[in-house]
Every structure is written in structure tokens, then in C-alpha cells.
Image (cartoon, rainbow over all chains, first blue to last red; front, side, top):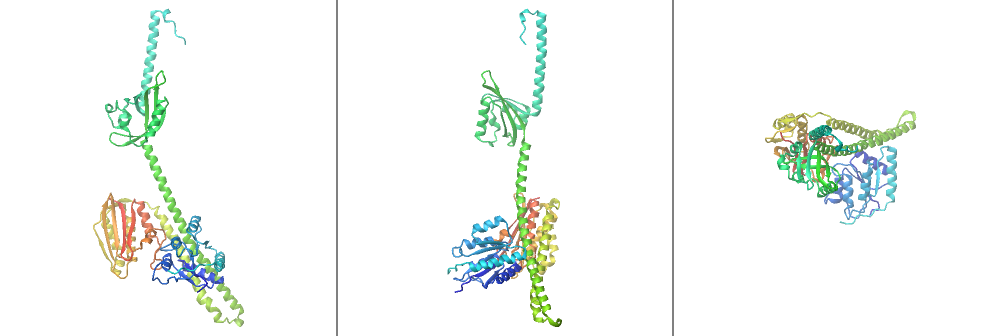
Length: 147
Length: 405
């Protein structure tokens, strides 16, 4: 069994996804990473039978979730994950440009693990992702139960 | 002044005194008459006995209540009760005046023709020697207009608060959406700088000016083009957001010319203007007889052009596009239905479609995510509405309502 979680980057902006991935790699992470372009795609990954790609039982996952996305936004994805008994323990890190305190509160209430604001300043952005990478290596992520 | 000793006065003196008193009294009576005339000119006046039975009403009372005097006399004020106030309200009123105190307040009354009017009221109890009220004089001023203005003010304040919230939401969305491309411009700008450093280092390391191609390949073929692609896309995105925002804000300032619109002619115009695209898509458009409506024809034209454009954009490539436009009149509103057999919108995504800059399929089609937001805004300004019913894979059904003409 794999011991490192697969990192799911849920991000509608392709540029952001590339920058996040590059900085995670620069921070020394060698985890497998999957990119989803909107909330619906990652919901399908977890909830839709026969979806491609689909989650695997026994695998560990960690979700990096943007908020404002087409179709289904990150808040709704968070709500769906946290209200599912099998997925509830999945660590979800909100990674978004939004810094509205109401939004941050709402994500914490719904049960996100960490809320990080994407800084516009690239040095800070890279630093935030680097620290996130170090944090991820320390996290103990529970594997998903079989379906 | 002590009363004079009348017994010591002569007859002539008594007559002179009496005449003086009569003159004085006539003066008082005239003064009272003048005051009463002035009061009647300004106020609605009623007098009741101790039990509340009406014993006197002035002309203004009759005029505002639409009751002839004979129908009011002998009745109590329940005849004009509007049922707006609670039992406690009137109990408090009666306790106050029953105890010989003056009561002030605002009362909503009902006239004989069923209309309502508001009066600012003062009830003044006339007390007998024992200090018990003998009769009550009620003096009222018509404040119906002021009450209506107060209500209107409240409505406008609520509407403003809603608009403010809407504006706040837009500001929030836009500031977020503007930040996203900035992250890319900054991030990929940094990558350009790194690529430059690499090339500079390779150049410095090169002997006799010959830079090995291998050292340049990655920055020149991969890093730089990718960075430029994201920087340009980011700048284009910001430019689009800003011009969209300007377009949206300008909408609120355009003066509307509201008038009757011949919707059959309007739709014919919209379809004629899009003939080329519709023919390209081999679209079949059916327009039923449409009722007229009241609105700004240029802005309404834009709404329907937008709906047809959406039908074209989100058509299902596996079948020829069919759009049906029908209309009906319901409760004073003309309701138009634009139904297509396109790809449809999943139920869970439907609430998002009117949100500013929101796009369901940003990769599949071009657009800035403003069309429906603008349609909604344009219709709201004309006291209209837009809503959607849609089923994924079957088609979308947009309905627009405007005041009927």
C-alpha cells in the first residue's frame, strides 16, 4: 500500500494549478498529484460510479480546494465531502484568493482542515505553498474505507 | 375685582352696565365663532358624550369619512374602525381620556367607501365640577399622505439595502476574479526572470561566445513560451473583467424610454439580425403570436438577442437546434418563453447562471459571463423578471416577464 496521500488540486485556473504543483515539488514533495478543473469534476471523482478518474478504496487523499470555480464551487464540494460518512475524515485544505472573513468562517464551520489565502505576491505565494508542502509531509492522512 | 354692590346703583347705571356686558359677550361669541371657523378649516372635529356617542361632527369629518352627518350622529367611532389597531390600543385610549387626561396618537380609520385614511388625533375631555368627563372633543389632522410617504420611504430603504448587498457581492466577486490573473502574472513573471538568469549564466559560462544549445533549449522552448502564454492570458482576462464591469455599471445610468413594445416586430428584428448564425447552425426558430408589453425597446431587444445567442452557443451538436418563442398574459404581466432543445443546465448549477462573471463551461465556449447578469439587471429596471427551467440533455426554458401593455 502506498504511504503518501495523492494530492487532489481542485483549481479552475490552469496557471494556478501549475504554480501550486511546481512549488509543492520544489518543497520536496513527491506525491502523486491530480488536477481537477472544477468542483463537479472532483465530486464525480468521489461520488459518481464509473467516473474517470475515480477514487480507489484504501488510498489516502488530500484535497487542495479553490472556492470560486465554475459549476460547483469549493464551499459546496467541502460541504458534500464533510457530510459523507466515508469521506468525512479526508483532509481538505482551502487554497483560495478569497480573504473574506465570512467565507473563512464558513469553511471552518463546514470542517475544512486548513484555510490558506493565495497571496498575489509571488514570493509569498511560493513560501505559502512551500510551507504547505512541509505541513503535508507531517500530516497523518487516513485511508478511505472500501466502498 | 370685587363685584360692585348692584343695589346701590341707579337704573340708568344698571342699564349701562348691562349694555357693556352684552357688548363684551357679543365680542366673546364672535371670537369663539372665528376660532371655530379656523379650527373647522384646518381640522377634522368630532364631539362625543361621556359614553362615546357622536353628538357633533364638522364638515371635514363627513368629507374624509364619506359618511353624511345623519349617519354619524348617535353612533360611536366604531363605525370608522379599520381593524388596523389592537384592542389594547383603544383600551389605552379610553383609560387615558376616562381619567380626564388628554390623549394623542395616530389612528387609521376606514371610510364608508372602504378606503383607509390616517389621522393624527388629540382627544380632549371636558370635565364636570366633580372632575368626571362630560364629553370629549376629538381634533384630527389628515396624515394619510404622510403615512403613505413613510411606507414608500421604508420600501425605498429596503430596496437600497438590497441593492447595496448586491453591489457588495459584485465587488467581492470582482476583486477575487481580478486577483486570480494577478497571481499568474506575478508567478509566471518570476519564471521569466528565472529563465533569464539561466540564459545569462549559460552565456557567462560559454567560452569564445558559443553558448551550447542544450543550455538554452529548456528556457527558450518551454519555460518562456509557457510563462508568456499565462501572462498574456492573465492580462487579457483582467482587461475583459474590467471592460465587462464598466459595461455593467453603465447599464444603471442609461435612461430608459418605457413605452408599449410590439414584441412580434421586436423578435422578428432580433432574428433577422442573427440570420447568418442561425442559418449556419441550421436552426429552426418558431415564434408564436406574442402579446405586447411595456418596456424599453432597445434594452428588451438586447435581452432577447442574448437569450437567442445563448441558445445558439449551448446547442446540442447531436441534433439541429430548435427554438420556440411563445407569450402569454398573466396577472397584468406579459410572460415570454424562449425554449430550446440544447444541452440544458443541470439543476444544481441553475442558481449560478445569473451570477456576475460566472461561467459553467469556460473552456467549451467563448464569453465573459455577463449576458444573463445583464439581462436580469435590464429587466429589473423595467419591473420585469427572468428565470430558468432546464433539464440537462433536454433543453433550457428561459422565461421573461414584463408589464403587459
